[in-house]
Image 1 (cartoon, chains in turn red, blue):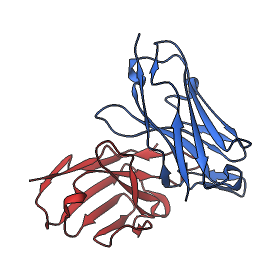
Image 2: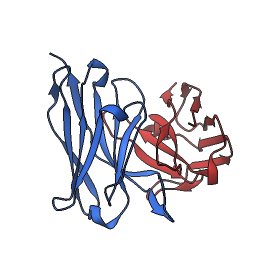
Image 3: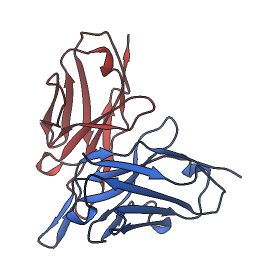
Image 4: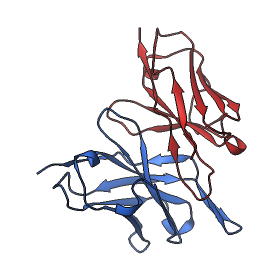
Length: 110
Length: 126
């Protein structure tokens, strides 16, 4: 079973700043089957990135994903007020199927 | 536009069975993909419960497998979750979700979750 560790737990930044979130896997993630989600209070998560670096439909280009193997990064180039939220990484592509989530990183206003 | 809507009791007594249904609109479950359940205890992270393929094949989180049943009703275009012998630890927001997983060549694979229901809060309490 792959374990995903996200860091930092909380990131305190100001609007306009760059956010860099990390997701580390306990073993290599095949074919970069790594997704990122954004969750705002009281809402369901929303898919941002899949395949480690592909933006989902309608996601602004200030969101970008990178990485491979065991180390993955979500970057928000310039934080907008609506970007302050909790972000989760998720590994998929396993057989038999199972979904594994990281513990989340909260991006809060400094 | 695919939409998912959870329904079911918001309060369940300890030791009883939690039952939820997810109605799917805008897409026929029979056409493919995985359909699953994910939960989130208050103030905590996301936990995958299990998924069902449109053909009926099911996959469960090993930590919950002994208590979980997921089924699909293609005639009503909906799928359901049953979680037995619940305790306070099962109190959570329960989301139904569309998983972009697939089966090919005799093997099945999980996918990213592109559509989520709004979630329904279930409290386990006497």
